[in-house]
Length: 199
Image (cartoon, rainbow, N blue to C red; front, side):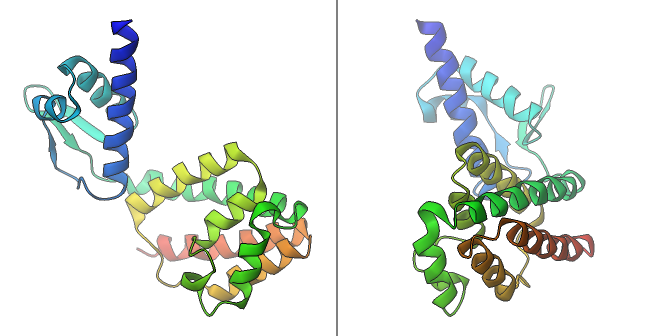
């Protein structure tokens, strides 16, 4: 029983520290001291070491012998590859959302169309999260959240995001036009990739 508790503690620590890295609360170069983490989470150092090893394998943490663990630098090159992965997932989400005519997010997407900007989209939920929800596919929603968090960690936000692109995708979704929704989403994200390629 103790062993499974240690395992679940390690998973919980890894999840929490990963979220803090992705949100920027733990910046690159920040030292991650096992004793401090063990005290914070109320566990022994064993699950902390397991969590740090997992985070190292995922690219979030760098561990140097005799020096300990630090938050890794965001992998910009890998993030640019993730943009391609994100595009495929986002296009699929838009197509499924179109097949569902917005599904459970239809009312929010309709509110988005009548709003003045992305920030005033009824629920205040970011547009791409609305499209993911509209897809009705829970695994896709989870994967997109993970990929988008990694992209934001490494590359930040694109300040030139086109609200008109978002409106065109939302309209295609609500009109039940999955092919058009997918095409418009792909064109929108390709422009996003061009912006990040210029950095």
